[in-house]
Image 1 (tube, helix red, strand yellow):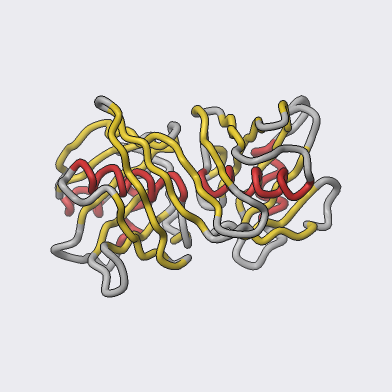
Image 2 (cartoon, one colour):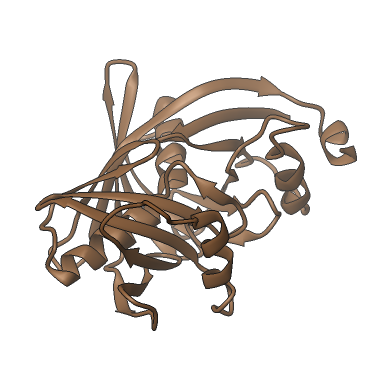
Length: 257
């Protein structure tokens, strides 16, 4: 079974291109392949499948086997993979959050992908300086002056558990009129070095609050993302996607683990 390892601002994924076949147990594969101690290790498993409504279909599974609606960094990795494989630079990708437009560009040996996401839906989260933001998946953004004393690995699960389907939790610190620093905790994963939809959620909430203006440079532990949003229409997320390596594993061995 051929696999490709990619990352978007160090949010890393294992990608399986199954446009010519499908399995029934991707959750099992995700739990096995994403384990950093006994397998390749990743923040998620990306599956590319055929689509009747778009160029391709993407499914994203977390390391605990749960399936997510969307993944901003993951879809950028899918677009870069397909572009490098000979697909057109501009694609439409079917997800559980709808059909998402992607625009891939090559800069030397690197790829930058711009993704069009539905306008963030923002409302108070019922906690101080907190906002619930729908950005293709559910997010909670909490604003602070610094990250000092913030125990996100402990806080994330507690806040996420208050939502029926869980939520990603992000702490955001505005540091300039067009700059925002964000740390992430993702449901089904834990702390990550980057979260694309989380970056859109945090930037959208910050624009909504009036503390930054678009375009926003979102600084995450894994690098930098750019979010563009006019406060009303669709949002755009831009960042690089990097192909790390390709390999092959035996399906039976993976499932057995």
